[in-house]
Image: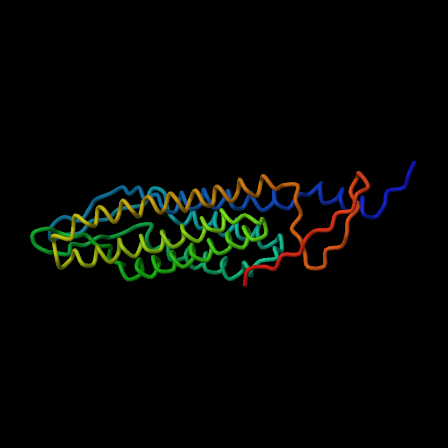
Length: 249
């Protein structure tokens, strides 16, 4: 029996545990986590003119953020050659805590003739959560850009950059339009348009996470190149040297 060469052993072990497959699973979990976070189905009473109402989220965001934290923990354990994932995980933990305040909401009436607007009692907390939410997904898209760099996938990189900008400005548009509508009632119909754009931007971002998972799965037999990658002898006897690509700063 011919003894196995060192290079062959390396190639065999790499094939047994394909890293891209391991990367794809957390991104798929992030896709479902974001789906759970953005879907808002509430049950209970709504505030009436001059009164208040209590309602509960049937799909609490806290569950989605638990899934998100779990996905980031899985990525962190892979020790990827990207920007540190721990700060992103820490931000997700803070959002998990903030989302608890929105699980059960007490709404009150803001009288603005000729209509009434209903705001949650903890609106300042919701506003902080919204800002942190947008920042989190902006940084998450940055992680996708770094993964795209490693994949040499310019299309995925451009999609990630465009969709995070689209998502950011759509959320800003919804909140700014809502604030203006408190004072100028004729702006209120524009809020529906801004909300529609926000829904489209959210779906686009979710599809980015799904697409990243699928793209990584397609590269399941590839190995993330490291700066000190040495020539590796394949099973056919040829020599393969993994190219070095610098991580996105």
